Image 1 (tube, rainbow, N blue to C red):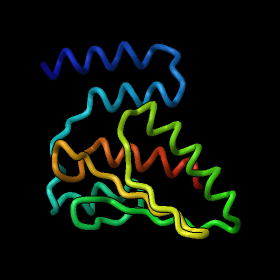
Image 2: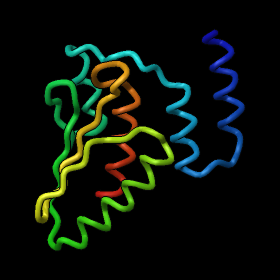
Image 3: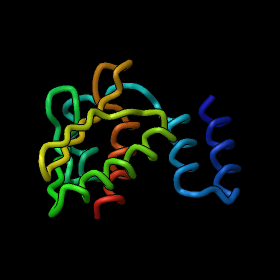
Amino acid sequence: MLAKTTQKLASLSQANFGPTALLIILIIFMSEELIPAEELDEALKRCPEWEAEGETITRTIEFEEYMEAIDFVNDLAEIVNEAQHFPEIDIRDLTVTIRLKTIDAGGVTDIDVELAKRIDTLVD
């Protein structure tokens, strides 16, 4: 099974997909197994702005203007809609807080960490 998946991913890497399509493909092939608590800190080194918080990973972003926050959320909505993996989004004044978890798994999976990295590209 692993060999077939590796072969499929190798052939897909030769195709000319955009970053959003690659994210969707990656999510399809990723495991929905929980990242054990003792491994979560290591996984979050790939997206250091995020923090483990209960069954989620969380990032809070401050904006200078309210409409910047709204524009960011609109851009975020496009990414998560294409990925079909929806975070909890809290907008308060100039602050947007995003919480990610895989509901079916009951916590944080590789899918959440990869989506966090993709969200970071919108902010950074």
